[in-house]
Each structure stands twice: as structure tokens, then as C-alpha cells.
Image (cartoon, helix red, strand yellow):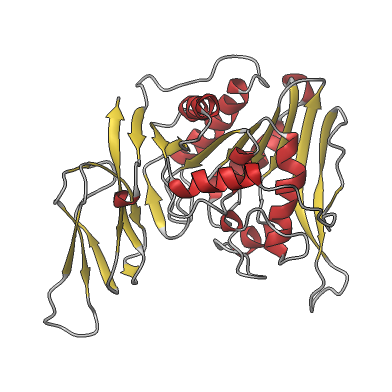
Length: 352
């Protein structure tokens, strides 16, 4: 178990509820009404170009009677496009007659970041996935996080947050869950990740779990699945096919859509990231030369990357070696690196 996740979970369970002001966000949809609704989460935002303006976050609600609720999000980071695109498609295609229960779709969770094509918000540099539980009187990003924390997460039974590597990472496609104190909840999350239908499923170790959206959902006892679907700040036909099929698989897993999840013929590769040694991080600035490709096996001590100083010639490259056996599951995408950048991620192969 990631110690920071465990500490956060326990802290949230033991801390008495604090009276908080209402959110400044208002929804133009009725979450309790049957049918299909397309609207906005309206966040007042006064700025130089619009004194009485609002950030208008698109939202769709598809509801048909009683049943479970799934909260589907993309655009948690604004340069990760599979989730944004797939959920925009789903919102246009899904009818109330197809569902049992309710589907809440937010394709562009951090809408300012999506508008800007950047990981973080151009307004406040807020990283949505490091902003929970949020603050109703805080920055724009914190206010959006607070609305999810106190209004949307409590509505759902299942949550899917679709990520990819954005502009700075390229990642072997996987769906993921986390180690949790509640064994039954953990097992449901792991099963949801498996049934999403990517070539691999991962038990994910987070370097900074306390303020994640993931943790905010898990603390409230919900079934949570996330993904990483390649990266580079774009999408491909292959990654879009994974996202489109995976979203519907998740809704079938939740019992909201009829039918069985459509899975690839080959069983997914089961991967685990048990601790921080999975991350190969740079202590130098320079030009990255990776010596392995995504999906290649790695042995402890193998050369994974070199970083070449470019300020002068005649300086030997710095070598970075694996701290564990496993599979190379993620790599930095740009070749220019700085101190602290993650160069590569190595995960344990549990089983096929």
C-alpha cells in the first residue's frame, strides 16, 4: 500500500466534517431528471476580457430510472486527448433507453487547461489532479475540484478518469487501480481496470497521492478506475479504439449498459508498481537518449537511458540504470530533460 494514500484515507475517515461555504459553481442540468441533458457547470470568473464572465464546463447527464451512477471524466489534464474525444463522442451517442441508472459525463474536467492545450490551467497554473479536496473560495482549479469533491463524487457509485501521457510522457496503454485499505473495494477497482480492456492492467504506485482526484474518489468508498493510453499530446486510431471500447466496457461492468465487456483475445498483462524504485528520475539536465523501447523487458542494473550535457563537447553522458527487474511501461516523450524529470518507469510483471 502506498503509505501516503493510506494516511490520506485514514485522515479523511477520522476528521470531523467542517462547515464549508456553498460552491460558486452552478449546474444547468438536473441530475435527478430522466432523459438526456447537455449543459454546463458554470463557474463565475471575472477577468480583463469579461468582467462578469463564467468558465463553462460542458456536462451531460443520461438517466433512466433507478440504478447505479457512473461519473466519467476526461481532460483532468488538458493535453491528454483520448478521454476528451471519447467522452464527447459518448455524450452525442448515448440514449436514455440504453442505460439503467445514470451516466454523468464531463469530457473537459479542467476546461481552461483543455482550451489551452496544456497540462495545467492557464489561469492559475492549477494541476487538477493535484488540487483535491479543493476549496470553494480558492483558485479556479481549486473551485472545480471542490465541486467534484462535494457535489459530483457523492452522486456516483463508479468513477472512470481517462488519462494518457500528455505532451511529456509516452506510456504503454493500461487501465489502473490502487492498493486500498478496504480489500473488497480494492478488488472491485482491480476488476474494473481489467474489464476496461487495455492490453495491460496496472496496480499503480503514485508519487504524490494525497491530493489526487483518484484518492478523493476512493476515500468516499467508490469504485475508481483510471487509465494511461500512450501520450505525446495527441491520439491515434489505436488509442481511440481502446478508449471508445473501454468506456462502454466500464459502463457494462457497472451494470449500466447491457451486455458483457468486449475484451481482447489475449488476457491482459498484469503489472504492479510496488514502490518508488519503479521511477527512473533524472539528476542532470541535458538531452535524453533512451536505450530501451516501451514494452521491453528490463533486468536490474540494465542501462535504461543516457543524459548528454549539451553546454560543451567532450563531456561523457550520464548513465541511468534500472533499480529492478520488470517491463518498461513509460518513458519521457521530449528529449530535453531537466533535474527531477522522470525518464522511465519500470513495472513488475505479475502474470499474463
